[in-house]
Length: 351
Image (tube, rainbow, N blue to C red):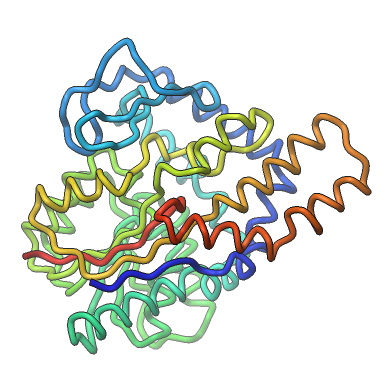
């Protein structure tokens, strides 16, 4: 199995500056979503292994939401269920505007600095580990189509599916305006998660992908089972992990919780991923471990110290000396090499 670590944070610093510049606005939105989430029924079963969670107990609270660690598979679960009403409000109402705002800016930069490396990693993994030179791919939860756009620029036949009208419209518009491709926009808006699951089962693509989308499903296990039932051979996914970022957010009440908020009502762990791989008899082909915990640490220190009162000179020392971008990048590399980063990408296949 191929295992890779880290990706330079320097490539994405400019793309993430909005989290800092619009911190108060993003924090207000996150707290609104958390308030809505807290109105849902209590979660009784682990989102990953489906076994009963300990009730009247939680491991920590983050921005008003209680979380508990599954004793069976190690998965981090939000205390409340993701109801149909909640997910409809978050992803579908008003075209999905509660969730889609971050996709609307810096499209080309996101493609080249975030999604193109993911596409190249997938291509290299299939070639190096499986001898696969050409393949087709269906990206579920494709959002604004960044990953499909990246793959298509590499010559891969790819299409995308999402339940957000706004994001599918964005993906199609960018595709047409780019004048890079001779085919029509390969994007389709689906009416519900159930329809998405049916589309996976019907897929004839070689690869099914969920790039930052699996964690947003009401029942991710349905997607995994659908892959098993499909004719597709490979499953490529990236998910957020229970990591240092979670604890940084826990003590940073004035800072927008990028990692554990919005649609992230639960987080995977290496143990919970191993659990579903064993359950569905998946074989790991490649893993790429990298996160943005160090960037979250830097951002939180900047916000929290500013709220406590800090001169521009002191702020400059923090940003340019003690936690400069290069130092932040090195800290992240250490975390990644110890499997402590906030995100993982994996290519798996059926045994």
